[in-house]
Image 1 (cartoon, one colour):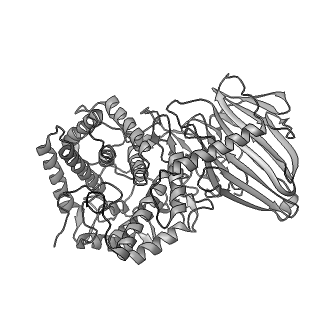
Image 2 (tube, one colour; image 1 turned 135 degrees about the vertical axis):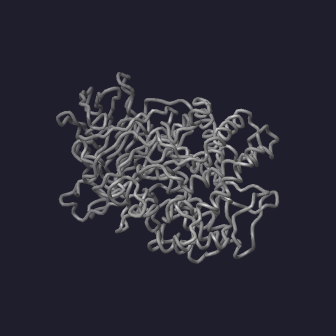
Image 3 (cartoon, one colour; image 1 turned 90 degrees about the vertical axis):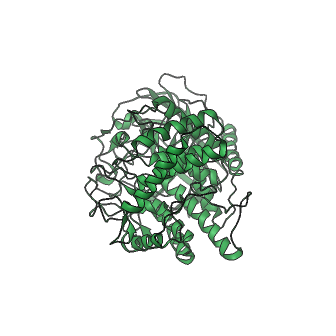
Length: 637
């Protein structure tokens, strides 16, 4: 199946409204436009024949000793693919100029700039768009040798080249062959527009050079807000840029990943669409950015989140929040299978949309409450109104089974993690009401918070396993509970927590890589298996660090970083041979990397210099907020 590059053999470029994947061989094999969740124009990653692609690469007979390397320009989202051969060295820079605006647009430009720095190299270019996930036909027209117009259903793609790159029709597609020598440059610009929009003007090389500098300046300027100065600056910066690239600027809504349908097990059925905004993932992503010093992203997401609560209403008969939405807040995510696509290396079905949107996952109210309450701006009247409506609804509805954080399709359970985050929701609400003197039914909120606390201690603890378990009717462990110390429910040095951590070490950890849970012991309604979950592996690092197991934590973190791809990106999972699996790149993984790095830095500093303290004399913490005057944490001693 060499028709499919490994999932990890990609970099991502984007303009904050859409994103494309470029393989290490120079092929754009994934691009949805005009939004992250729009139908694809290029999707050869899901079907090498029907999906469509755009390839720009050096072409030598049998590669003739050619080496290909890919990198990002430092601290930017400009992706450079270098082709190095005995006869010449050239490179292709792929980028999109960020559209950091509240106004969505149907026009998006993906620029491909070539130059040769030594000798000479022959290049070939092929553009084979396949609109609407490869389901729709298109027409091709050309006005001259440097412009081509692909007309699809509702979306057009314009291809324009600089002098020296002659675009020739190949059926309904376009190809070009040309040679560049040292000092020469060329460019190809792909522009997507709404159907019927006029063709853009063909840009000059000077204009494209200006666009490259604008893109570079944007990312360097954005990173100046980052307050992280720890030991892992480069990889934390890359994760921050990745989280920003996965955020839809017009609404402030982060998506879970740029892709859909990439398998958690090659050949298996766990092939989901992740191009949407999960309340949980988005809240945690924004929290990671807040901890790094990026405040504007937090304000934008909170506005989006308030809008979802206000649009739904908090009537007792309905949930105030759906677990996920489209990036513009649309709650309709009907799931369909694209049976005409073979799937990545035969992994089918390929799913578009996500039926899990209709699930009940009570943990989202904990993450949402934290996202609304962190940052000291809860004096905002609309924000407080949204938070109180959520908590008043949750007070009536918290004690029921749900599908849980992992969106199992095997039936509802009383998941311990869902109860844990319910506790977080009321804990943050009580603290915010007190800190900002806001009206709230505090007696009721405190009563529910304490009832949830007692229930977790009594029913979430398994005496035989000496550990907190996945749900109340099982002895199976669940890595989501690695967050128990971070959210302030239990001290990281509490004997019951350390016993739980030891049990996870034995059952869920394999050479520092962490499984979410054992699907054989806890059936989730799906066939097949999955790899270790990168989110959980980084949460494990953080839990080890907070529990004082610093040598083990640092060793696990250093090993996890070796699973990053060649440009510092992570998918969702790691397979048995160290391969990356699942949708790519994954926001969950990168936010957890950030929190693990910050926690490990903080604990290493404490070991060397003693505990750090914040502006108000309280210990510095990262992750979900643990303000002063915490409620009692669990202990059986």
